[in-house]
Length: 395
Image (cartoon, rainbow, N blue to C red; front, side):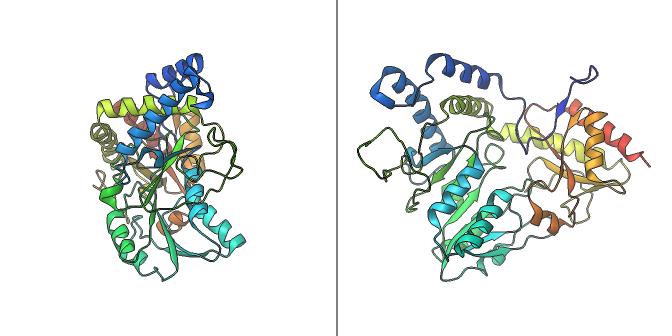
């Protein structure tokens, strides 16, 4: 609360908030009743903790429709960034060629550029257009005989564009190149079907569309993908072996898992599956449509990533993310006004996606991002429009 007025979170592309009530309850119960190392020492409590973790593996294996049909190939990490690093580091060798795109988040761009600097990784970046879309032909044209990996995001965190992943993956499969999909923005908002999309790996986070707590995420590894461990340590199995076990999930999971967080993630998934991903997405899209329609009534507002259009509703290939600028005002100033006077939480700046902002023509200042979630309401949208209206009247 600020000045007696409820603060509204409109930055679900960063993290979902609030969480479903069951998330906090599940985490508290895990802490109170079974917060031990999952499966360690063969104790009853250890088995109970392991049942929570392994049950979630099985559910996520189905949720992402991994053609491997092996829940152990769902490996838990701290977030999507952690998972992307695990996949890139575990597959790529010094001197390998990798293709990615200008639509990527720094969780992809930075690991690749670091490895280019340190290990001689050769990097090609396919462009995106002024609406944030990637042309599959631009990815295919960059494939070489020594291409080791293609990394592409599923949905943009800047303008919500959902990429033609199946077409990209088909072009890569014809050349025998695996695709690593960054599903940080799509998991829980649009279907992420590994088999249908034809991707080899999916990196996901638990704290956005899946409605779990921060500090959770994972990497789902498809069949035929052989990742080397990049972190080694205790696993609770084969303790006499001085090298990391090679069977999943132990080859990629070293140390004690975040069992408390994973219990919360399971509860977030409960809420999402009970209501249905499609119904939740339709609710979020309806809010974004209401917001876009309201923006048409405001002067000076420019919706970014729409090629100069002022859309009255979301395109079919978008998630409920709208980035905008107010002519003559710095986006940071707009965000501060919305925060202090409007009691609205939005995101400003480059959103950790600098190449996308270059493609959209919004660098270096970036944009103001509104990202709608399952607990937002029409009243929240109307308050956001009223606050923006006040911004538009500023000199």
